[in-house]
Image (cartoon, rainbow, N blue to C red; front, side):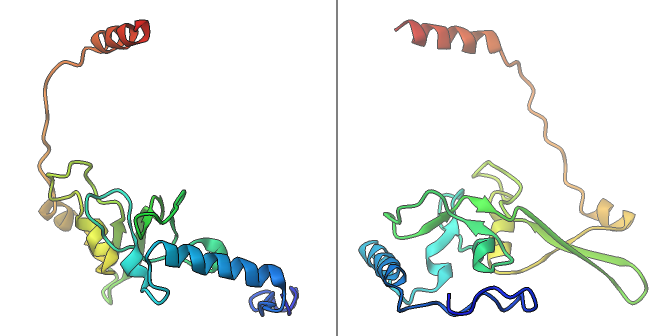
Length: 176
């Protein structure tokens, strides 16, 4: 860095990448080659290559890592870019903001960024991830009336789970 850290100006220091440093030039060239080898255009928009890593079809996800200066955390590890994208597998999960209406009523909005269901057949499998991708904040119910109006029915699945059978199957596999 050409401008070292200064405790009197911590927000703006350190700064200025020393491009004359051969290690910097080499690292930059390596990064460019890796991106080109993966088939990603050097001028690609981040939303075209950085996607949710948990859904069956890509959903663009914005953000980056904290050390990059990003407030919205989205991390892709490990990733060799072989599929031409960054599959985000770590980052923000629950985001909420609260403010107050002029009459003093709280107003809460937010996301469960990974959505609310692990079942691909559920309408709640991708809904909040897609809203998060488009920055379409979801209004959360707050008053008793809002909560009652937004209540979802509970679904129960009855049956027995026989853990002994699973243990026996594992033991049989170990014997093979």
